[in-house]
Length: 244
Image (cartoon, rainbow, N blue to C red; front, side, top):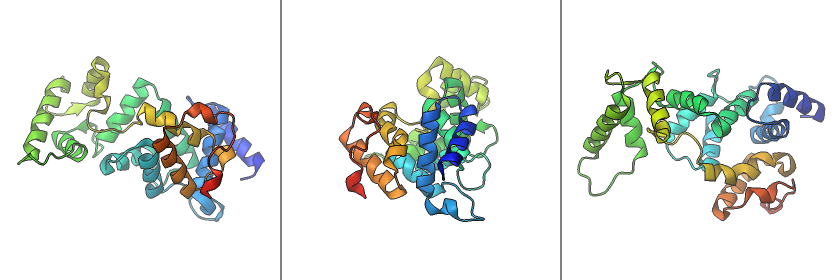
């Protein structure tokens, strides 16, 4: 993408972006097109991040490991349900994912947890998500019974109208009373510490020129090293050159 097109797209997306400034939007656009690669230049091909690339970003950069939750996060970003994440969906999705208000995050998390999209989180959905996210203990003879008990405890705390399922009203009330319940059924938001470690890779994209492979290596290297994000704010390429 040439400089003029990049600037125009940056201006357009910044106008409708609540939580990123123009510099950050420009970095994320550059990173998006580096991740997409040469597909962006092929006529007639839909330009976007596919499910596998996006899941790799969630895993390597933000430490997510739950396949079911990562799939739901992908669907949360993919607003038009075309099977890939466009540059607009990428910017607006990350804006909420990384810096959303509590109200925005409650709506997002509820949609992630509402597996069949019927407007409720059912007992069955709670069971599947908790079973998927909790580690099985070797000593447990029937872990499903423990998960069923946990579902009942969760309902007792969050199901304010006592109808055996959670509406958004139930969920919102419970989360406002206890913010820790925001991710009650699995981690679908980045851990703040992981986000701070990822900051250089996300917002130094213009100078680093990360490709998809180098992005994964770079982000994983940062995570292992626990690098300070402030070290990258001078815009210099500190450790990327030896990864090519």
